[in-house]
Length: 212
Image (cartoon, rainbow, N blue to C red; front, side):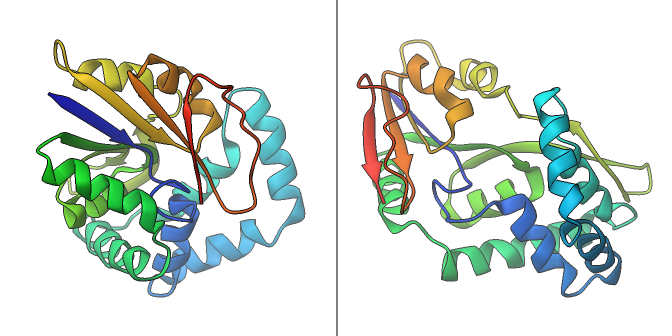
């Protein structure tokens, strides 16, 4: 049996799907639009975010996700579904989607594992007919988003993969993400995706490369 794990952002689709989703949602949700304008148009936002990330905290991501606070779960899921459709129409990395579909048709277990927001990952996975695991958003008892991530998959993919992988399963991993190097090396076959314009073979020669 084969299990094929796919990253989402810049692997299956040419987009940071957290920022992309929030931009998409901001068209219909004024509170999100206001937050994005406040943060994304401030040059210090990314500088401070980069400093915080070096200290182990993605402050920029936290601030952006906070813009979802107060939205009902079903509203977020609806927006995520519409966004997944838009991704498929405009931002597809076709060679990787072809590979995903080939795995699916062969009967392999196909899983998208991403630190992107779970509603987005799950909406994309549903459209593609596969499993999806993403970073979990918090919700209140009455189903409104807290604007916080309660289970972040950033840095947790190797553990997630180990939990998903059945005994004796052959594991194949596809990712463009340098932070997935440990995951790629733990796979029986690892494929590093090099987005258009990027040619650095950063994972060495023990993995395969797919140049987009």
